Image 1 (cartoon, rainbow, N blue to C red):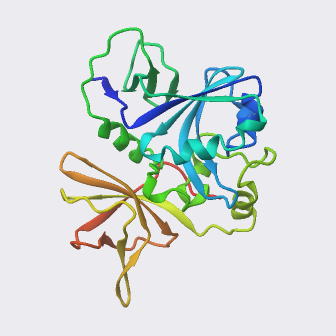
Image 2 (image 1 turned 120 degrees about the horizontal axis):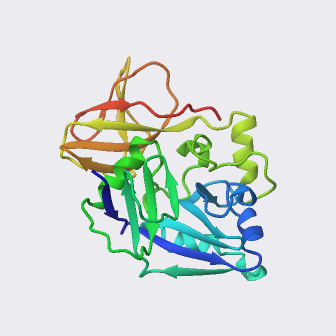
Image 3 (image 1 turned 135 degrees about the vertical axis):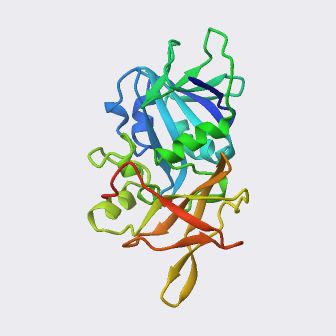
Length: 274
């Protein structure tokens, strides 16, 4: 059955103007010039130190018109950072708070602004949509595909590779020119500066650990707190969570720090090369 989900965890930002492409090219980790009209990609925006203020889906709807779907909890910091230097360029940013954003999992006959895998995003669809799932189903699909869910608890804390963005779509380009934070991103790739990655876990519990908190890993000397919980979601009686950890070898045991519930490491659908 096709699932229709109201994506009320996102806000639509319209970016337009005769210098929209040039401006975004100097801001985002993706190669905006290579994004064709009608295509989309996950991307990140960093501060000058290379720390991520937002992860979002960038959709090119015309030569100089783009949509950015940003998690609402990342605003206003993410938008303020993104348009910080816009005063020097012919580009505008409009926050469309009334836009209807629809996530589709499965086949759809409605025209979509973005499609990836078996999922699609509809923006202000002309036809009526009967929603049959809650927004957490969309978040769960993100987790299962290894897409990072960044919240305001972890803004400006991680570089893009710590969120596995080098392995997802065209989120990071290592061939484009300069952009905000590019030096840090390049150093992480070519000098091995990044030692962390994002991992997904599942547990049989209805408990919700705090976003920004830690989990525990078993060592020879006992259990030790480690990492940062990026996001959580419940589905079918299971807790799913993403955590950014130092990379590890083998298959160590993990558990929740608060109640010692075991965590089952989930396979990622991609490799973690830098």
